[in-house]
Length: 389
Image (cartoon, rainbow, N blue to C red; front, top):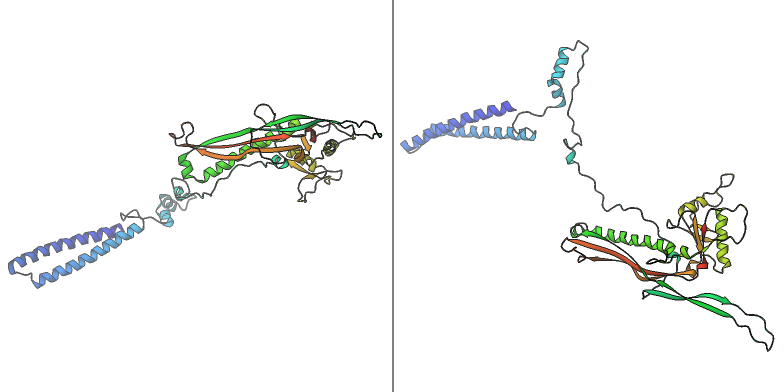
């Protein structure tokens, strides 16, 4: 292609020179006689036509070279076969083909490396954000709900009852009973936390704020569940149900007691205190251990793997939560024995005038809640170890 390009260019230059020469001749004739001769005009017309044809051929050759990736008309891309035939390795092999020699021929392949065509591969970016796992929160659902408009919840708790009721003879003095009460109080506590984000990222990634809101609310729920169950009651802490519950004391001696027996006796203990239990709280590990119990034949003693029923034991629902320590249980009359009071339900607020957020283009996202919990009857709850002693 390079030879053809050069040949056309040389011929085009020759024609151009002839056009120039006859053009000058025609101009001289026009000055001398007032017009060029018919012969000169015919010659000039033929040269111009031929010049146009050559120019068109030259343009076509150049365009073809560009389409083939060779704008200079040389170094034309060779096929694999042409590269093989022209390679020095193949020529040496042909010269020595009667010998037992061999040769290798490398062809540079197009790959996904950055130095090849890798930069042309666009990633397949999935929408949204894959968030981390979240614990199922359950304890709040067991307790009676309530509201308060104060920072302190007070209630009277019966602390003693002397029942003197008896049959009495006519005219005799009636027996007198007595009831004593204690004033109890449950302070409202606050559970807050916050996170900072730049105004730019919240504007460029609108979904981020809703993701932060959900995560901050979940963080409150985690702490709330731990407080409802095991809050110490000291300082700014709720007085948790497990913390106040009555210690397990078997009301009946059972030989070779199992974990299932222990839970049944705990239910009996609460029932003897006149507070029939409405639920059982276990760590997921302990509940799995109970479900996997088998008899000597390998059949499950308690569970049915094909059952879709909700976890239950001795007719009470079983609630599993990692907020309960392994090998510990809690049974009780949850709705009767305790009540939760929301002063301010979990809410998220956004501000730009906290500290130096304004000048730093930052936003503070704050989540907080306020609540109190009253455990009316600690004896309505029984706690202990799942594993028999």
